[in-house]
Image (cartoon, rainbow, N blue to C red; front, side, top):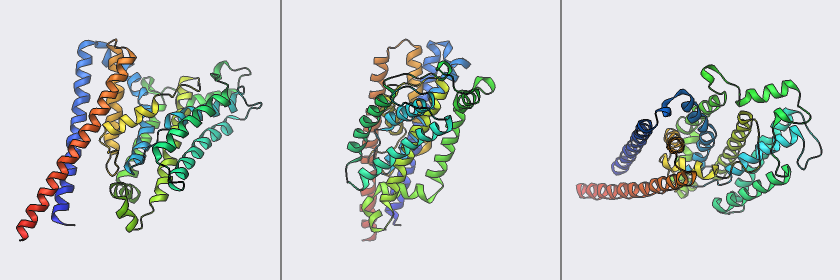
Length: 354
């Protein structure tokens, strides 16, 4: 590796560290401001609400970061989140368009199976058919939403009040997946978030898979020349993205105790916002799991803090939109600065050699 390339890599690491530090400081600053206005912000009850609101967003965002790392995007995760929960509920509890019921374990397998199938279709249409992932997953978003409405007949399912009631062990098992409470009333669902963070951190930062994702996303042409399995990796990240969305939908169904086909409308865009705010580049080749987690925390904090301050949900959407645009603009500016610094380094190095 040349001296200029090493300098460029060092500048990129410094930039990532500065962005991580900036996100952490922003989170602390927002928390201090909200606490100064609403003392209930740091109460145990609100902290539990804040943490629980991060579970689905975080789990899906970690997988979405891998998709974006390859320079692709998955807009269908919100719809898959809703579809997996709806399929599970319809098969398990009956009703909707299906004239039969199944045991809970079969219903859970079907919910995750439909998510897996969606991920495979996204990968196939992007890799084999050559469609842009933006178009593929935007279309799949509508397909999944339509299937949710069709299968459920726009019905909301509530296991505890279903007629007839499922077996007691099934109700207990399903509630234990995400809705059961541990010490200090912390829901089991939060353990899934911790597990997802550890899994994806290892996958991204400590495996050949994660290193290759970054390399292929940073320079797809060089990856082809090096004969890296770009197409195979695209299949994998789309499947992971859909599976995490489906799992998050089922876990939220367990925690909330009901599921409806229209509950996931804004999740896709919040997930992308969290990944971008966390420092990932939409052009691919850059992104970290820690940065994504900080992006998730910042978004959850904004939503929670603005709600405590009495700001309407419409204004909350405005804030999140502005923060997302600001993050993308910051990414563009920082990349221009890095390229300029790299060009100056190359010129100075050439001059030194001459």
